[in-house]
Amino acid sequence: MVERRHLLDVDDLDREGIERILDMARSFAEVQRRPIKKVPSLRGKTVANLFYEPSTRTRLSFELAAKRLSADVLNFTASASSVQKGESLKDTALTLEAMGVDAVVVRHPVAGTPWLLRKWINATILNAGDGMHAHPTQALLDLFTMRERMGNLEGKTIAFVGDILHSRVARSGMKACRFMGMEVLAVAPPTLLPPVAMEGVEFTCDFDAALPRCDVIYMLRMQKERQQEGRVPSIEEYVRFYQIDAGRMGRARPGAMVMHPGPMNRGVEISSEVADAPYAVMTAQVASGVAVRMAALFTLLGGAEGGDGIA
Ligand code: NCD
Image (cartoon, rainbow, N blue to C red; front, side):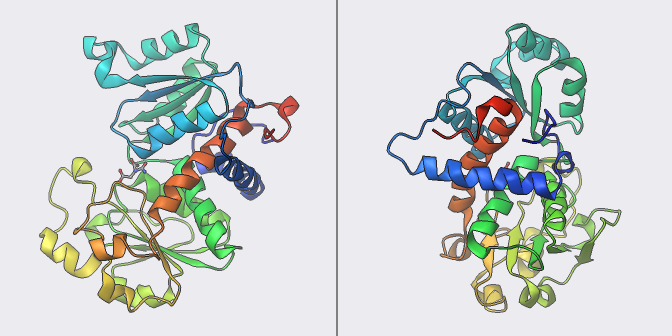
């Protein structure tokens, strides 16, 4: 068990902690293949999903993960709550706390929100994406997906490609991949690269030159909702240099795989042909998401008496 009670970013874990969660996720993935997919590990615990931003995969898989651990689940969607009447985040959090919630899974457009919640309430906090900042469970499920396919990740090369500037997925993902000993490239037009270097990450604007080096090509969504001004001359131009399509895959290393956190903009960062190809593992990422979030919830909430949580 890791001692920490929160998962705010991947730095809350060291390599050993990450590997423990991934190993546990493997057992939970096995549970997902049983006819009865539920274990009693978190019976009596309550998990609240506090979502202030749209989400499909993250919200559904946290919900499913908690339910399959037999926890009670509250789903709070800001757009259908008293937030619409002006209630603050703090009062909302205190309300959940008063109801005896054990864990809060939070997604919020403002970076740092999960750290505020940690100060305000006693529940375990899991960051499900804060602004452009961090998305640790996405990073863990991506590591799990890669490890299941490639085995040891040490020395393997991954390129994060596209709108890195606005991407919490890339920020947590790059750190997590470095922890595991991977070579990490950040590939984007100069206007979509972060302004400051990230330790151990090689920045490049030349996707075609980077491709033959990559074991994993991790495509990012063009985050139009976070872009105040046009950061690329035109979508056509972006597609020409940065879309992963069948032609570019021809330049990639044999056996290279393509990942994307979803939601995809087909025809922008990824062609439909690539999105539907066998080397694209997006549905495996989604399936991993449930098992990895079960492992994260159990690690944080299960306590020492819980064993490995699998009956
Ligand atoms: C991402 C997110 O919301 O951070 N999606 C996800 O969680 N799977 C990425 C995105 O929105 O592009």
